[in-house]
Image 1 (tube, rainbow, N blue to C red):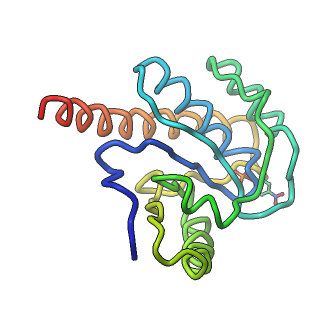
Image 2: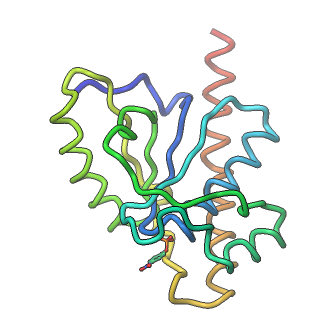
Length: 170
Ligand code: 4NP
């Protein structure tokens, strides 16, 4: 398989994926966007869902409300479903939980059948443990989701920043 450049060093583009693209992945997109802007990192971000239940919808109101309290603006985001082209457009595709990861793996295999010789993105788990789906939960579940996403986003940013600094020094 032809892989995109060494994306762990410093990705140019990152796609965050959950099931519906209205709770976890838009929240992660908003958190990461704020952090990469603050750190002046040049990374294109987007999010999508493996399912198409909520295409065109705003993020869940609870994600918008809790996000706003924490200083993140989710109000302009709209849900979309992942397309096979996304596997070629993004250096990293982050799955928010194991189900998302398994679904993405199947989709990625199908996508590879179309463009065998084009570099494909790397599929990774966003965190070492699942970001729990808060959709059937309460506001507290959304708060916990943001706490986990913030921590994990900080980890990724520091990995990318360190690698970026090392690359600049070469
Ligand atoms: P998300 O949460 O994958 O974090 O956006 C969900 C949103 C909607 C549904 C499930 C999970 N749903 O079944 O409609």
